[in-house]
Length: 256
Image (cartoon, rainbow, N blue to C red; front, side, top):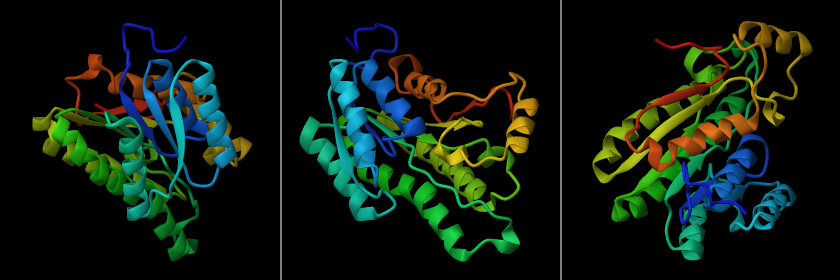
């Protein structure tokens, strides 16, 4: 039975996870549910995958629903938040994980590829936070975790669009932390390194080996390791942490 642990318990919390049907989002949804949260699994097009996540949560004794929404669209993001409120009565946790890549060297990058990445990776964060913050403020409680990337910290060749969007997520989150802190709402960033997901599936083997060699732990991470970091930041144990950027990257990008 999920949700019975004491440390890091999220029993009775309600969480929205955008891009929750696959990869890191799926792992986050399952981990939050395991700790007792009722989870809204957002997806854009992977209905079957989202349904499988919900089924897995329910099989463990948890509560979850799947909600289709393209969160880069303002109205659909607002509808997602409304559905969560209508179903569970409140929103305690918001995880902005929806993301995409359109890698290309800048001279060859199409304007559409720039716009698509910025809209999916950054505007979706604005849309979902704006919709969720007001009910959080009324309750004087909230935990927001936005998923960035080490590319948003250190940059990466062929990813000017992706790196810019993920750096924007960091700046947005830090500003939001200052706005919402007085209302007992924390806002933090998790910046994964290279994690095997659909977004990294097309990495050439040569680049994959270079990344592993550049990582002090000499391996790639897992979606579950990212999910554990997210779960910590939304727990009561992290109540005095806000505006932070937690890198989950095996030491690939060291700050300080």
